[in-house]
Length: 114
DNA sequence: CCCTGATTCGC
DNA sequence: GCGAATCAGG
Image (cartoon, rainbow, N blue to C red; front, side):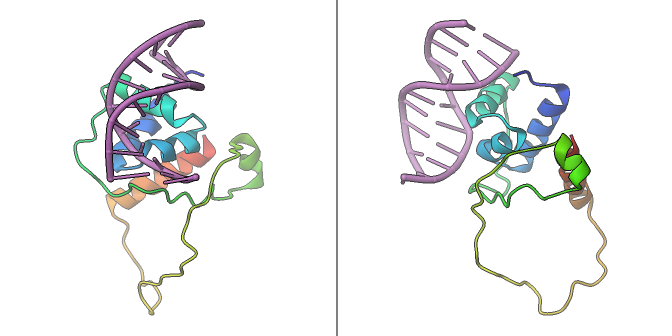
C-alpha cells in the first residue's frame, strides 16, 4: 500500500469534514489502523468536532457500471437506520447549493470515480 | 459486541 | 513511511 496524493487529500478532506477513521478507511479500502496511523504521521488535527461519530455507511452509491468496474469497492457494512425519517412533507423546492454541499458532492464524485 | 481514535513496533 | 496489533476508551 502506498498513500497517493489523491488518497491523502481525500483522507484529509474527509477527516477534517468530520468523518471517522473507520469510515474513511473502509471507503478508501485501507484498514482504519492505516488511516489512523497515517493521520498521526501527517500530524492529524481535526480542530473541531464536526458531525459524525457513528457509522452511517450507506454502502457505495452504485454509479455507472462502467465506472463501477474501475472503482470497484467491495465495501461496506451498512449500518444505516431502517427508520424512514422525512424532514418535510412538502417536496424540496429549488435549493441553492452551498459551497459545502458542492464540495461534498465533488468529494463524492471523486471518491467514487477515483 | 459494536464502535471511536492513539500508539507502538516490525517491516 | 507503512500498517497490523494493540491500547484505551464510549
